[in-house]
Amino acid sequence: MLTRRIIPCLDVKDGKVVKGVQFKNHKIVGSIVDLAKKYSIEGADELVFYDISASTEGKTVKKEWVSKISDVINIPFCVAGGIKSVGDAREILNLGADKVSINTPALENPNLINQLSKEFGSQCVVIGMDIKTIDKQNYLFAKTGNESTAHSTGITALDWIETVQDLGAGEIVINSMNKDGMRNGYDIELLNKLSTVCTLPMIASGGAGNKEDFVNVFKETSVDGALAASIFHSGEYTISHIKSSLKNKKINIRI
Amino acid sequence: MSVAIINSGGSNLRSVAKAVGRLDKSYVITDTANEIKNASFVILPGVGSAENVMQVLKEKNLISVINNLNQPVLGICIGMQILFEYSAEGNTECLGLIEGNVKRFDEAKNLKVPQMGWNKVIFTETKLQKFNSYYYFANSYYSVVQKYTTATSDYGTKFSSVVEKNNFLGCQFHPEKSADAGESFLKYFFQIS
Image 1: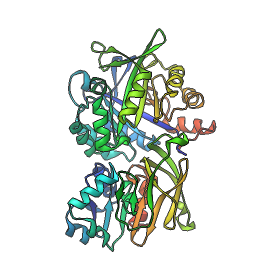
Image 2: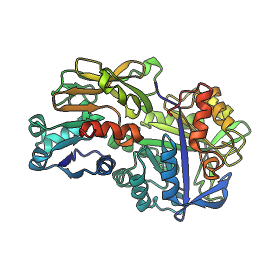
Image 3: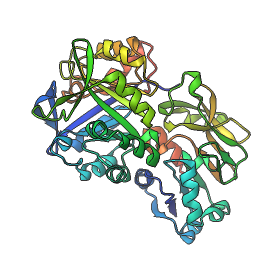
Image 4: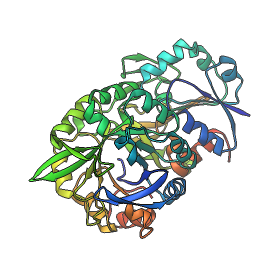
């Protein structure tokens, strides 16, 4: 059976990898190609490249970076940021990406999910979900790349998961806005709640602060992968370090 | 010693090409019959659906070209699936180079479909067991284990992760995305020891 995946995420703004806290105050943490290569060599199971300024500024992810990254890695690679059409997706996939992740454009035009899935197969179509829990309701947020544009769509996560499944999505990434950058653990409660309706591979995102957080998310939920950014960028933990501690806890992992 | 990567309309051509390039092989991405026939090695990639890939190959008049190749041919993912006689994906008649059919993973077994991620590949022959490792898969359809299966994996059911018949080799995983293990497998195809 499949191993659980460890997925480093490169949040990119203006050509540099950045990291914020709860989607605010972004700081530069390093070079795109250097980090991509480092994570690939260290044993990352997949890499996500997310152009956080693309969607909020009405642009598509910068294509030159997609080919530069795909040239230096030999693991699967997902690209996110302002992908609004089949044409945008085709260009990115042709440059070496394996999947595209869509968030705001899917909320604005759900039929895009169906079009992408028909054109490229559902395995290419990842739906990113930025979710904030307010009074026990889990709401989808759009345009989260910038504090001033982020807003609730009023759609609940449970409803949205069922919708995207019906439309042919292949995977979903659950990003807890309450946990993002807080480094105090993944949103176990949210992940377990959403798992009850999710039949697709599900990736946890937001909150990883130490190696125990990875153990906990895999022990306490059924997620297929755990995505993280700052814990790897800071250099505090390497991917191989995290993976060997998971292996020690008998979690099925690729080493 | 050139490698022809058949342009079957899929979108992972560049990644496959880069992986071939990393092994110092010169390659051409092509849909021209002569370039394919004259290559030392041929790769048949495929992303999308069996139906689409077969349609593209038909439109480009490449079916008989592929069927008559004598040099080593590697089918990757959908490129492997279409080596069989039939795929349930889009009810598609395939190349028929290897006996057998391609079926869909059964969601009723509580499986997440597509299979997306790293799965263990176990080779049956002792001399190939050095290639046992985790490889990257992204597929909703699979070929059942049969006579020409040379490696298997398990996803709710045991399936063929590698098949080999005469000069035709097929892998369900993506070697170009399978880190060091994938590179070793490509070397096996290219007969680099």
